[in-house]
Amino acid sequence: MSNTPPSKPKRLRGDRLRARLVRALKQAGGAPRPATTRSPAAGTLVASYNVHKCVGTDNRFDPGRIAAVIGEIGADIIALQEAEARYGKRAALLDLARLERDCGLLAVPVAGAANGHGWRGNVLLVRGGTVQDVHQIRLPGVEPRGALVVDLELEQGPLRIVAAHLGLLRRSRELQADAILSAVQGRSERPTLVVGDLNEWRVGDRSALRRFAPAFGPLAAVLPSFPSRLPVFALDRILARPHSLIAGIEVHDSALARTASDHLPVKALIDVAAALAELGGGARMAA
Image 1 (cartoon, rainbow, N blue to C red):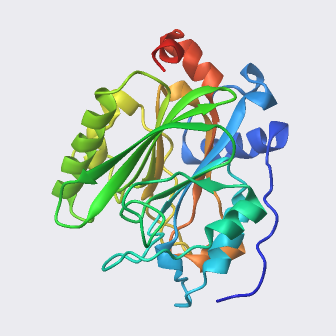
Image 2 (image 1 turned 90 degrees about the horizontal axis):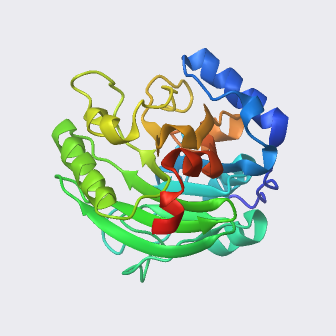
């Protein structure tokens, strides 16, 4: 384990972040909302990071390196995948006290995590806001997969996060997408993000992402995040309902991130106020 302390989180906000996100979207063929329509105070940075059980591309187990990448990202909300040992007691791999001290991030509590700190490898870390509800889903399929549905109340308003890690088999991913959609549709309306390693690189007729398109489409820009040293496949996603919730999205690509895990993190600047306006205010009332 590395003794190198993680770098302080960078709170990327305002014109500088918007310019970077807009540039990344243009390069990927996406279409962000004009930066002039939102204020810097409206932005919340959300990220997804498959930490590969803290084993880097150099085959070293180094949780401190993962913590340093999380510090680089500076997210307000970050969903982690493979943050626990996969089998057996699912032992915790990250130092949550260190992440709270150095990054100000707290793990959303889950049931049945006596030895770990997440749900089937999924951990959701949040800076600020109030956790109103946590729902754990056992996703169908051959592998032990799961998702967290977390309702938050942020300063900007209500937000629902679905943190998930979908399976390696296409049929399993389709069933898992259906299970997530069923869980979301059965709850009150509010701005919602599906965040995680969705393990799907296709976008056509054979893609499991088709299941999300009616509720969360049009899908965000395709941003390759895997493998981290030479990203080719867009496995890691942040999907939004309504679509105006995402103001910009990009891959977090740093020298450390390319070594710490086999996935690069993805991050999105979201605008809860804009999403609430599109939903007509009913989401806040339902919350």
